[in-house]
Length: 141
Image 1 (cartoon, rainbow, N blue to C red):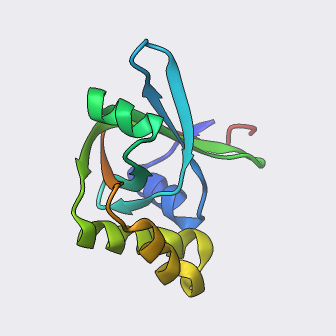
Image 2: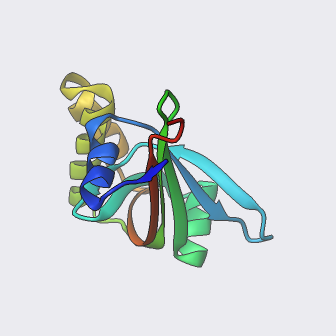
């Protein structure tokens, strides 16, 4: 097992459209885990969520989250990012990011439709700014 460099972390997060697993904390202290699609803006992880979701409530209350992205095939790898979040309701920015994220996961032919469907009032744009990153590769070696 080897630590990833910063460049390797960026590459790992962007080279393939892997689903992230976002961890937040419920009001009663229990953990909540949800799959997310994401993209990067510099060092920030960008994703969207509906304003009435459990993760939205948790993010708004605590301002913190952790994200795990992994490769489930040998030689195995993972990136865990802990950080603080900011939330935006700006519709133009939301539509831009919803479209961009959709392009990563669904392909360019479906990106615009997904962006229109998800870049609406009630959807939130979330920026996760890393405070700690743990990243390893070649775990099975």
